[in-house]
Image (tube, rainbow, N blue to C red; front, top):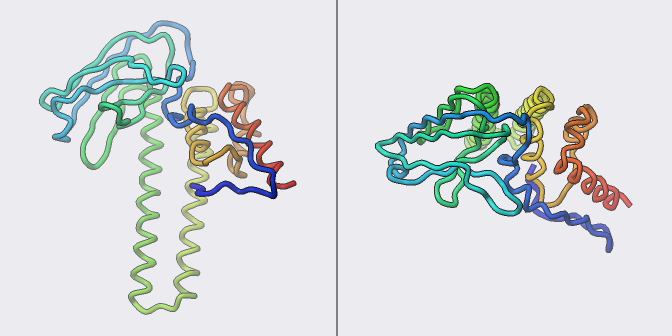
Length: 248
């Protein structure tokens, strides 16, 4: 989905929106409930470079990132606890580096970090989020294997026509599976913080606002609560203006 240039028609350029606030779309604060809830984070890490480091849970506040909680990693373990008055998607940071997203919600949140993967579990929305992350990672691995298969086929002496036909078939299959995974996940989570959060991740994959057919379908079928989310509403409006200018 990455686009590396801005398409310009004549002197009409796409409207540039302030999408700096979308850089952290996976950690956008999204209100879900207004009651005060207690959370506990129990974390473990087998990554040696994290030992002795301070980890921070951060959420956006205007154009800055605000610390919600912090803890030092001691012998591969860290712990945080406190109260929140809204359920929100946040991010775990080491210094200025974002390590992973998580949902700050009521309950005991378990974080495991190793060199192969990061997992979060223990609360309903975190379980949903990392089930999705796991499925997406599996598709990413399969996409990598397709690229390796292309190299092997060329080295084995297959004609380029045969290679291109086979590889394009596999790529199209994976693209369809990925689109279905993302669409289904967002639609299943329209009414909580995960649906808008993952949709905004899609938005952040472009250098300026635009809508793919997949994104259009997601928006068209969404309830008003999703369509009227401030960042989504602004993005969609500007994206449609941009696409209209491109077609003029």
